[in-house]
Length: 495
Image 1 (tube, rainbow, N blue to C red):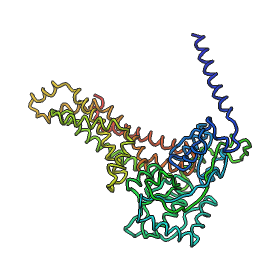
Image 2 (cartoon, rainbow, N blue to C red):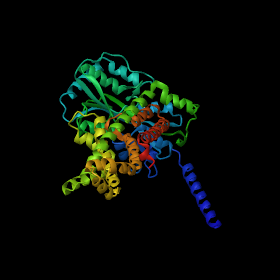
Image 3 (cartoon, rainbow, N blue to C red):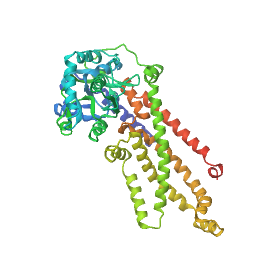
């Protein structure tokens, strides 16, 4: 036994030493020519021009596409990739906040940026190009470049906007890409935001922002959920098959950034790491970012509450059909349950929003409630059925023999016992539903999780906002469990 223990300890030690050797054995990077190597991993934003360029320029390297910049930076710091390939302006902002990162090459390749429209659009696209030319001629475009790209720390300027018009301009963006589209003082701001708000004012329309992740923005445009999308969008051959694009309104560069320690001649920096108090201030207090969390919390609780009500009623109906004597009804109920339990929830949510309800004016919150109600109903219906069937049939027969009707027998005899059986599982499923609402950001709903993503994209703090919402979700789950315990009659809860 002792020999076995020694062998296990020795194996663990060798594993740790091997991992350390691999970590410290990472060679320094001199130029981007070092990247065309099978051992190199390049992080890029998914479905972007940088991803296509990296695959063509560095065919031997491994390309790692992720959904947002903050996750890319976390991957870089954890050693999951060697460099990150992003637009130059965001990199400048990132390096101001991250002393452990540095440019490997600040100007890898020029990039042209355009606004996206529905394919073959004839309503907004021609007008936008006309507006863009006017903006460049009067010098405002140059002022915008100086405001957002030449230096950091600027805010949105004041300019006349149409606030009374009944016509709106639906704008798709992510608000997660400084300095083009991000949240500042709890409002969308940045170069792209100023540009599109000026365009809306020029058109005499009220701007309405549809905020989602980048892939959701592209899907939303195809589904007709927006009129225009602006978010540092680069034109690719694949995108031109599905969307129309404006004339180039900005030309910048793309850059490679890496850990400063990976550079052969990395320069030391004096900026200290932020303490817990400073991180709390920057992520929660500064620019009143707690308001984003508060708004997201209210939306999360609203969706969870309405979905619970709708799902419970749906589950009761499906349970009734599942226990029906008619075979066709039982088959329909079984098919419903199999369908909604067999498809991943996030896929189902996106199908409902971007396909089933694409042609309607339903908001993301409404679609979320409908979808989660159907999903929750599929799960709890089987719980209800099992709980009802666990009550001995003899008790139903005894109730009828005592003069109760079938309905009264079910309500007064069967149901209390069924509730006692189903309660612990139902409570767990309700808490799971509340946590499931964290995926609604995929369909442009600003819930609690989406609010944390918006904060992370602004502060480039990968973990603190996630820790904060993890604590909030914990207390929500704990509070729901206590609330259910308090609401359930003591005779049922403790019997």
